[in-house]
Length: 283
Image 1 (cartoon, helix red, strand yellow):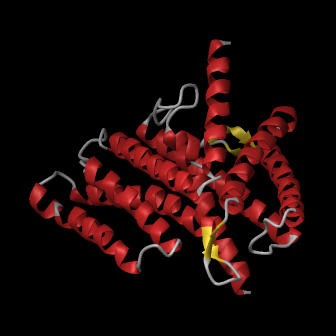
Image 2: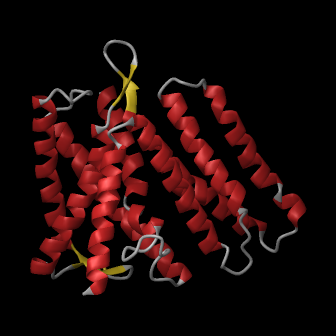
C-alpha cells in the first residue's frame, strides 16, 4: 500500500512538472536538457558495469546536453547552424580517444558511446523541432501543443493498454521480452489514443491552437504513430534491461524506477512523430 501511495504521488508530480514546463519555452528547454543529461548519465553508468566497457560518462553527458541546447537554439533561430560544431568535435574526440586509452574493447566503447547519443540525446533534441516551427507571419513560433500531445498520447496509451489488458488480455504481444503486454491491451490503448487525438484536434481548432492546421485524420495518424513507436520504444528498453540483467534502470523516481524507465516510449515516439509530421507537410 505504501509503495502504491509513493508511486501515485511521484506520478502526479511527474506529470504536473512535465505539463507545466510546456507553458514556457524556457522552462521546457531547461527541463528537457536536465532530463537528457540525467538519462545519458544513467545509461552510461549501466553500460559501464558490463565487462570490458568503458564509456566516458562526463563527456558523453555534456555532449548530449549540448546537442539539446544547440537544437533548441537552431530551431528557434537564436543561433546559426555553426552551433553544432562543438558537438561534432566532441563526438570526434570520443572516437579518437580510444586510440590512446588502450581499453580492452574499443568497439564496445564506441558502440555504447554512440548509442547514448542516437538513442537518448537525438530523440530528446528532436523535441525542439516539434516545439519551434515557422509561423505564417514569417517568424518562429513556440508551439506547446505538439510536443505535449506526444506525451499525452503515450500516457493515454499506457492507461488504455493497462485497462484493456487487465480485462481482456489473452494473447501475448511479445512474451519473450515483456510478458505483461497483450495484443488486446495494445489495441485498446491505440483506440483510446485515436479518440483523444480527435478531441485534441477539436479543442485546438476551437481555441485556435492548431498552428500547423492538422486535420482530424492527421491528428489521429499522429496518435497512431506515437502508439506504435511508443510501444516499440518500451520493448526496446525492456530488451536492454533484460540484456544487462536489471529490473529498473535506476531509482531516481520513487516507485517508478529510473529516467529510462519513464521516457523509454518517448525515445522512439518523438523521432517517429517528427518524421510523420514532416512527411504529411511535404505531401
